[in-house]
Length: 282
Ligand SMILES: Nc1ncnc2c1ncn2[C@@H]1O[C@H](COP(=O)(O)OP(=O)(O)OP(=O)(O)O)[C@@H](O)[C@H]1O
Ligand SMILES: [Mg+2]
Image 1 (cartoon, helix red, strand yellow):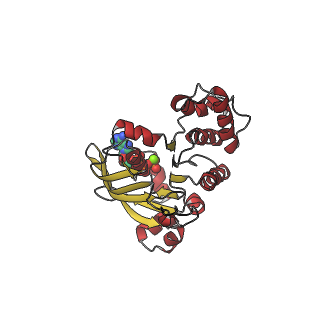
Image 2 (cartoon, protein in one colour):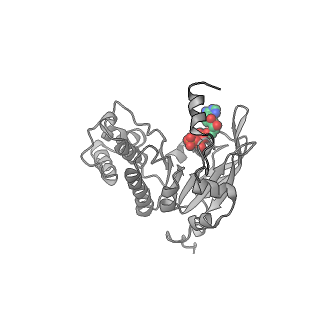
Image 3 (cartoon, protein in one colour):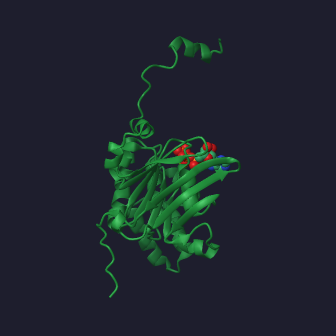
């Protein structure tokens, strides 16, 4: 008899093969190496946060995971599919099982919230209009936007736009959700609401969620595991990989510096010097 699958509440590493695995990836744009020997894993039902400063290569990591940027070396597997060597057909099959919340939201401005969320179902399923309508209303309900079906993106607040982007990303019931800076630009209270949404989707659907963020407060709330990137000569490297508890205990100064974001103890210049610089006096 086949072994029973591991239970959903087992620790992530005991939940079988990772759904996402990146190994020793080197990636670059033209001559600039951005990622250097970067590895990470996400298991079924796990929330993994990729953290690091602006420009450290977090979105580039997502591009490699999605197969839109091909690394120079290393490997990327999603649901066991080799994303570097996969045919377009194999990649498309993987995309049907993924959802993506883009850093910019990327909603269609001339389409209502309903139409934005319905689009993936209309394009990739043969469901009839009634079923699509039920499904879209359910997804908008999940992100607490019932009654906003007819609004255009320009008629929604920043937090509501992000919620529509989530509803669209989960319209096809993905097994894995990628989110790039989901709470960037939102006030802390609305950002907390997005954290709750991520946790609820993870718990309710056992969805693996890979979140790119630099908000450490959010990481403390949502992350089962964390991969931290730091820029280095020759490309960003992983400087930490582990749980929130392990992060709290990590003494690496590069890691501590990012986590604590210690303010400068002394101003770099006297205020009078700054004024001189502003008016162009030497
Ligand atoms: N399409 C591109 N072509 C050339 N260089 C790029 C491209 N996209 C990103 N870069 C460069 O790669 C580096 C990493 O960029 P990336 O967008 O991955 O950073 P990030 O960690 O997501 O930053 P942020 O937190 O600001 O979103 C940066 O130096 C950036 O200028
Ligand atoms: Mg980015």
